[in-house]
Amino acid sequence: MRFTLIDRITEIEAGKSVTAIKNLSLAEEYLADHFPGFAVMPGVMMLEAMVQAGAWLMRYTEDFKYSAVLLKQARAVRFNSFVVPGQTLCVTATLQKRGPREYVLKAAGTVDGASTVNARLTLEQFNLSETEPNLAESDSMRIQSARELFAQLWKEAPDLNKAVSETK
Image (cartoon, rainbow, N blue to C red; front, side, top):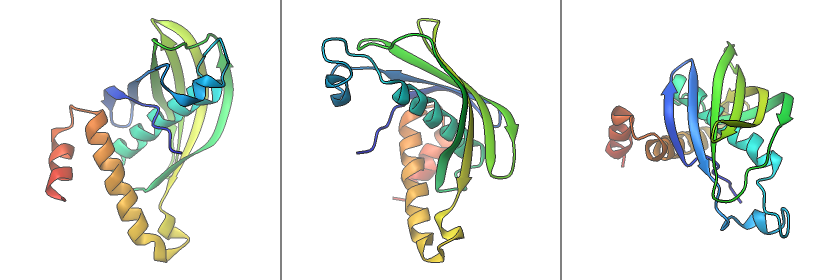
């Protein structure tokens, strides 16, 4: 199962930062088990929301050059509060250091201005075809899929929206 934990990107500045939101709904299946009678967003899902926000910043900054963005390291992760159904988790990721393949980000999640989670994340980007040349078509499909999803999440990207519609 694939979890898309970003519902909307509200701000993004290439090479600098991204702000996104995740609206937590009681309809999300994993909440039935976490915890019965006291549904809260699992900490790993809060962390994943920050990773996904950071990955969107990387893709946007690099003009969707890479098909894969993965978490390489999470440091100084701190959970400060619960996120419960009906609340909106606001996630920010700010670039601290950038290398050719890695970004180090300071990430945080808040609900109504109160801190819920923060961490220092290192994300790595690459194309699958770099190690398996026969996966070049897969890279292209993954990049196109990411462009299409980004166009839904970030409504302020008219050039990208146009590029997605022109390739169909």
